[in-house]
Image: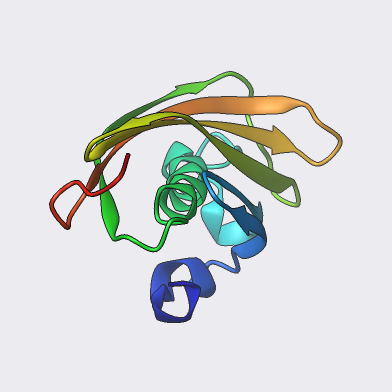
Length: 127
């Protein structure tokens, strides 16, 4: 999936781990990712979290997409920060899944918490 993910590659997002129901991705906040307040634009933080979520919910080999998600920003990130997004599956039932993603600065300080709901595309064969 990463080979076809032009957005993640363009932003320099790297995958550290993908396992059933889990994924970890990282991204360096570059100068073009900073807004007028001098902090990382929330859209980039969301995109990193969404990327980890996507790889976690697609880790079973069956195509899945987001059907809903939200994020809570807790602390600002700044240019030069390396952010790590860790996605963990909370539950799956039929076609649906729920995943939590923690976005942290290197060193562990939490920047944001994201929750995503997934939907499988191929008729809900997941158990």
